[in-house]
Length: 97
Image 1 (cartoon, one colour):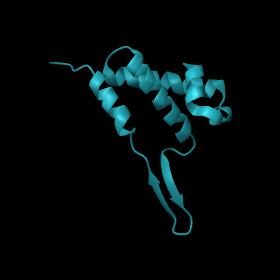
Image 2 (tube, rainbow, N blue to C red):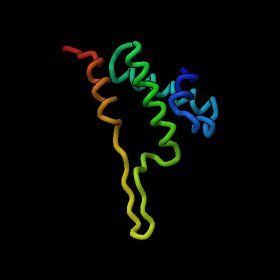
Image 3 (cartoon, rainbow, N blue to C red):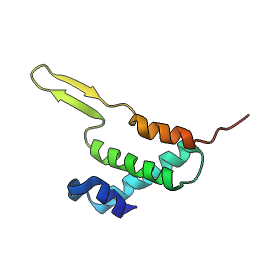
């Protein structure tokens, strides 16, 4: 999955070490499996890669979406894009009590 993440990141992959990318992948896999309540399949693996990319891009910005200096305004990103959320919700196992 590391090579696939590098392809997904493109040229900016050079800004991250293999250890950082590997950790982002592990965190993303754990998050996807926990949320969906199942092991990864191909679709969930793709979602985990996309989430790993987002985690890397948000590193050191902690979800900062935009920042203005003259008026001192900041906005933050919350959650993941709708397409990723839809995929995760489709694959999520429902627990009945």
